[in-house]
Length: 325
Ligand code: AVJ
Image (cartoon, rainbow, N blue to C red):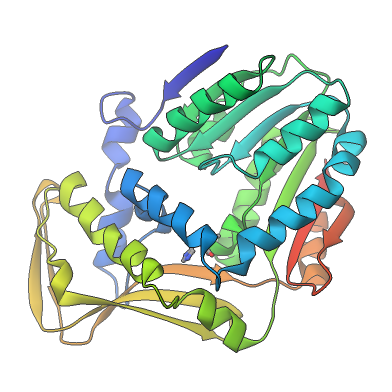
């Protein structure tokens, strides 16, 4: 009942090998420097993210979980029996709420988790199979782009692509549009897109969530450098960088940076790249956009993903949207 495919292991696919690291080179050679958030998620980074989800300040996971618990049955009724594809599945903890709802309605369970972290993908798939005796899993260790191009025709009447946890916040507005276009292309008419997004709220609440008192977010941010060290044979010294996160109110986004604590030179040997840092220079490692529901619904609509139902929590802190092609 378990099938695992790795589309990003260095040897798996020639094209992946050719493009591997290009995004890091592009980000580190531009001013200001940036790195794609996907580099957070090596196995250690995925573990740290799981810890973040439990933090008292990090309201996102808790809030979305509550919304799912309340409305999962309604979601399952609306979509009917369908294959669940999840982009950025991580530990699949919230997905269990959906699986339970589909199971209770007597629908067959076909789950396609997609994640760049092969370790967490495999361990959560095995755990799910142990807990859901009728479940079929096809796990894809992959970027979203590759996975969306490789979805086989579903054996069930329909398909729902889930993109929950506000991962959409990592994309710029133009990247979001491109992403929605890829979702649209991957769906048949009548199929569904379930999207979970963090909403705009007071700056104090947001900044606390990305500057937790235990320093887990700081460790998560710095771990990206550790990941680059082993992936690209590099010599970032984690002592020479610090975590910096703030809410950019004009752009409605949290920005996470790593700030260089001195002027320094870093070698990234397998990328053939030397990176110079000025004292206090930063690398932006993540944007985490905070959405306005009305605006987002309009954007989805324009991309042909028609919002058919939207749910929020009592504080209007988090939104869950079910869209249909
Ligand atoms: C997984 C992208 C939703 O933006 O809140 C958590 C990642 N970064 N703490 C987010 C994250 C810092 C998270 N997303």
